[in-house]
Amino acid sequence: MKKHNFSAGPSILWPQVLEEAAKAVLNFADSGLSILEISHRSTHFIEIMEEARALALELLGLQNKGYSAVFLHGGASLGFVMVPYNLMRKNGRAAYLETGTWASGAIKEAKNFGETIIAASSQESNFNYVPKNYDIPADVDYFHCTSNNTIYGTQMKSFPDIEIPLVCDMSSDIFSRELDFSKFDLIYAGAQKNIGPAGTTLVILKNDILGKTGRTIPGILDYRQHVERESMYNTPSVFAIYTSLLTLRKLKAMGGIAAIE
Ligand SMILES: *Cc1c(COP(=O)(O)O)cnc(C)c1O
Image (cartoon, rainbow, N blue to C red; front, side, top):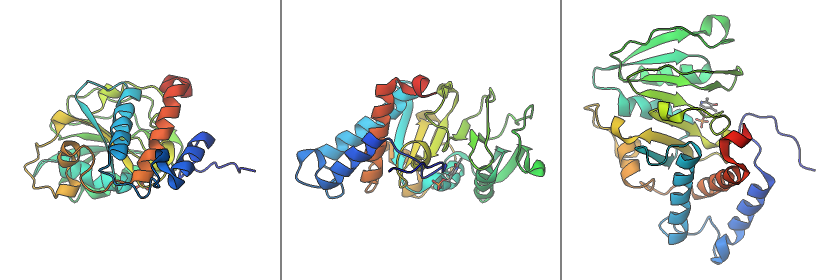
């Protein structure tokens, strides 16, 4: 009998998703090859990637709104590094909301790139609440928050209205509740909580926030390169992305985020 899995991640996948993913490991779409063996440049896989990227935007209500979706390596933890690398200007600064272990991890990495302002923190009470009524300086390069604090079980119910880019780590609640996702300029989420297996990270970003830092960014860490190369900068995690697509298809068939919420 299948056991219950209450872990935040890697977490439970729909049985039909597991079955289809298992089939694809043996013989993908009657191609005579495993999904683990086909080229990521094959028509088969390019179609998977295109559908997964489009469906992620569609489910969030962000298609045709100047956003791109890419599936990267490195988990949300690499997002902690890529966000300041791509968005914090040379000698710039950014503001962070410190609401838990993962937020603290993001702050720690941002400090390597420039001044990192803690707009508010609940650390003194072991992160048992999400601060409200804090000020965000108008001249920072972006504001970073964590929508759901996986370890502490606290969740942001509202997000600030600001003119600067709003960046959010949504690893453990993306696709689980309706939000106005167009409020956000960059969303990232490790797949293993709410989307699929570990090994890929969904990044949704507004194209016009990139290229403003004056930094030289290594190609593999440059969001622009990933967008330009349609999420094929290097060999993607084909299995994790295919299985994530199966979850997204199932979510759409169920009626999307409104239905699952
Ligand atoms: C699990 C988790 C992370 C870390 O994700 P990795 O993909 O393992 O790097 C970061 N942020 C949040 C909110 C998480 O729940």
